[in-house]
Amino acid sequence: MKPMHRLLIAAAAAVAVVGPTVAWAAGYYKTPEEYTWSFEGPFGTYDRAQLQRGFHVYQMVCSTCHGLEHLSFRHMGMAGGPFDEVQLPGEDYPTDFSSDPNENPVIRAIAAEYIIEDGPNEFGDMFERAGRPSDGFPYPFENEQQGRAANGGAYPPDLSVIVKARKGGPEYIRSLLLGYDYEVPEDYDVRPGTYYNPYFPGGILAMPPILFEDGVEYADGTPATVEQQAADITAFLAWAAEPHMEARKRMGLAVMLYLLFLCGLLYAAYRTLWARVKH
Image (cartoon, rainbow, N blue to C red; front, side, top):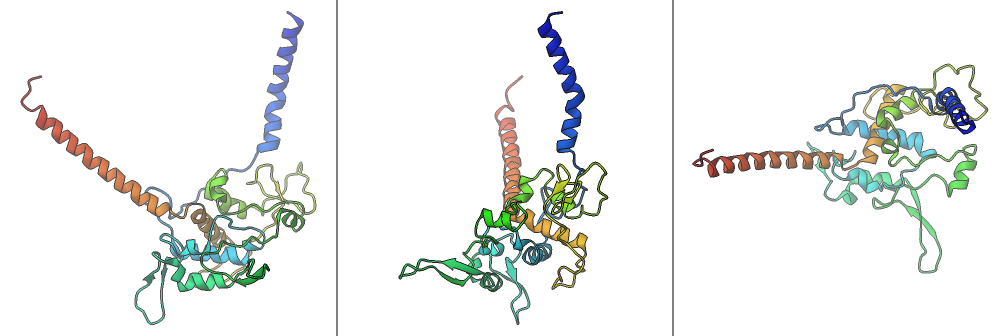
């Protein structure tokens, strides 16, 4: 056998032996737990109450580190959003503000809670003002360097499309939030400022556990267990990643019904056209 052939065979054998071990160490993670979501399937819709609770969890817990770069306040009042219908005082039924979310009193109140830097004004100076429905969610840090400095060198990712950006989707996000109670394997070196979570690829991440039994209180009286908070914030982030999902599904259903009708019409035309022709 030629020396080159021996070298290639030896290299292939080394890859066969070492390759799986390296891949396991670098990419092993626990499969996310299955969970039933209201928005799954072709007829699934968002649970408005759950989206509102999820937004509350985002405000109270997640917004200190993570932004929603691709969302404006007004998006939450558009059709399919958490606050597209609002129960006004003295009225028996909710009012639909989806056609003009800028006039939605809940959205206006939420936006006003934020301080937005604006300008320059007529004197060339920057100034601060209360938020408006048309404003985007402000990022919690001035820049990436500030975000890393506040989080031990790790940069908190934007959550606008995190559900679409991570393999496993909503199941992965929910499992990750609930995955901090597992015992650390002996071969893992969990350094100060890092945490073990088997659902995270590699097992070690910089984000600490963020959900606790006494972390938030829901206005609708729903018990704010850790499992409930994890499901609610995940549902909200799923909506944030695809706020027009319900409209897309309705359009898809209408298209399918139209195509079904068209198929029937074409078949009837075919039968009529060839009825007197011998085959």
